Each structure stands twice: as structure tokens, then as C-alpha cells.
Amino acid sequence: MNIIKLIREKTLQVFSVLIIVYLMLPLAVIILLSFNKPKGRQNTSWNEFSLDAWTNICRDQTICSSFATSIKIGLLVTLISTIVGTMISFALIRHRYRGRGTTSLLIFLPLATPEVILGASLLALFLNIFIPLGFWTILLAQITFTISFVVVVVNARLAGMDPRLEQAAMDLYATPLQTFRYVTFPIALPGIMAAALLSFSLSFDDFIVTTFNSGRVVTFPIYIWGAAQRGIPPQVNVIASLMFLGSLLLVLVASLISKRRKAIYA
Image 1 (cartoon, one colour):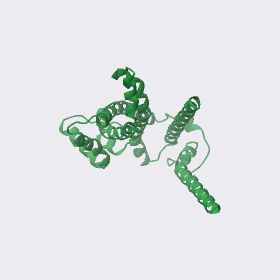
Image 2: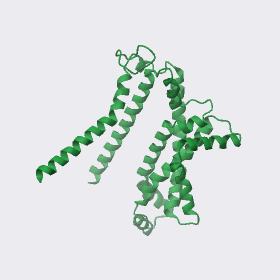
Image 3: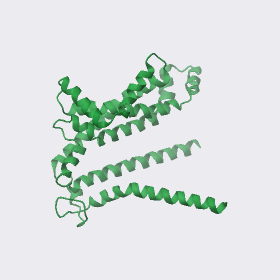
Image 4: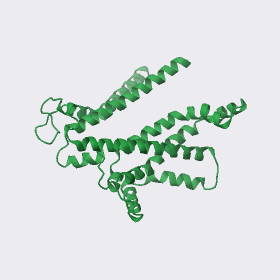
């Protein structure tokens, strides 16, 4: 029985490692090709080691301008969606009112709607109310579906909160504002931060909905799609590598902070 149990554990470990390698392999290829000096326009096969792409990321100004546009839109979408989505979550979890079920259905509807249909519907809406396509229509379109993801994540956090903690704070003569500030908000903060990170990732990565409503504005995914028709430059791989390494650094910092807090309170 011990041998069978050992085989099962080792098999699970091997499969886990293989899955992680499979998921990380495309990222490793992107990082590798960022140091490549391609012969032609296509940067799909290794030719020669070079740091040109790293030392001259903005050789094509369109790359950096589209990246800056995506960052700007992503930050605004994250800020607005996180605030609005968090307030909606508190209303859905903490209160009972007429139309609550309908509100929940409408909030979660964008999650079940295909992006092509959502993008085309928003395009028709903007054209019918005479809003010119561009930066602001991209912002509104992305907020429309990112709010739903924020509500899902924050709902999960709020549903797991023990209401007795807030009741204990009020028993100790804390005002509703003090209870929210010192008890409710700190407990909900990890879920809110997770929702914010998810919102930024969805906004920065979105292509389908953005393409319908972008007009002449070029975001980073739209630039990559256009560049793929003639050859993606290695500078794109550099930016992708920097974003991956930055995300990895954030995860490591958050993990270290979490371990330090556990050690303090242990």
C-alpha cells in the first residue's frame, strides 16, 4: 500500500511539473526570441544573439505609443471597474431588495456573452448615439465587461467574511464608518486587489471588443495583430518579456509579504 501511495504521489508530481513546463514554454520562447536578431521581418526562428531590441525598444514609435495607450486605458478601466464593481458586490451580498436577482443576472450577463457579440453590440450603440469611436469608446467598452469580473471576485471574498467580526466591532462602540475602515475593508482588500489585477490584465489583453470600438486608436494587441501580417519585430518580445518579469516580481513580493505577516502573527 505504501508503494502504491508513493507511486501516486510521484505521478502527480511529474504531471504537475509537465503541465507547468507546458504553460511556461511559450513564455520562454518569447524571452529567447527577444534576444534574437532575425534575418528578415519574421522573428520566428533563431538567427543570432543580439541586444539591439533591448537597447532600442522604441525604434518603431508605434510600438511604444500603442503600449502607452494600452497602459493608460488599462489603469483607467481598473480604477473605475474596481470601484464600481466593489460597490455593486457590497450591495448584492449585504443587502436584500426588490430586483436583486435581476441585477445579479444583468451583472453576470457579459460573462456569458461572446466577445464578438458584445463588441458588435457596443459598436452599434455608440454609432446610434453618435459617439465617435476612439479612446473613450474603448474605455467604456472594456469597463462594460470588466465590472462583471470584479463583482465575481469580490463577491467570493465578501461571501466568506464572518459577519460576527463587524458585529463585535460595533459592540465595542465603533461607528459604521470605523467598522468599515478598520474591519470590513482590510478583510475585503485582498479580494479587491485581486479583482483590480484581473481587470488590468483583461483590459490590456483585450483584442476583440477593442477592435470593434477602437476607431483609429491603436492599442498594443491591435498593433501586434497588424504587425503579424508583415512580421512581428523583436521589440514586441522585449515588452512582453518585461511585462511577464514584472508580473512575476509582483507575485514574489506579495508572497514574501504574506509569509512575513504569517511569521509575525505566528
